[in-house]
Length: 150
Image (tube, rainbow, N blue to C red):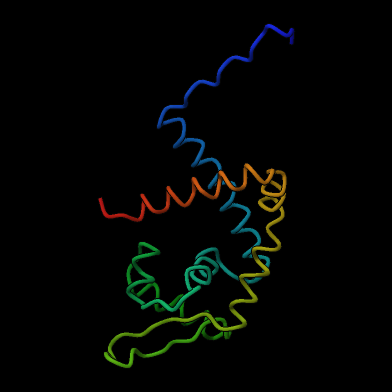
């Protein structure tokens, strides 16, 4: 490029184009996530529950996070509990409410899944520090905005 030539400014993407890019990126992530979860004997939903349980959640809270019926959550938690990956605890103030909590084995299982996500790890490793900081900031803003009721 000659000294006087300037690069063309990037076109500002439309909301639709950003949605498409976000969908493509998340689809690739979830394909990697599901494949690796399966290698560890977990369904993608079971692995997602382990991620969500970084802190104890009520069964109803899990159902809301998973956007499913509470009866489905019971089966998922039953299977994870039988493998020692989660445990249930009764709310001391209201015995009708049960909380699910990740165990140390559950912590280790989701740590291994994340570590083995080679496609995702490779893409993120290729980002420079400034890009990682920018991406983390944008994702936090998106999460905060999307978590608010409309």
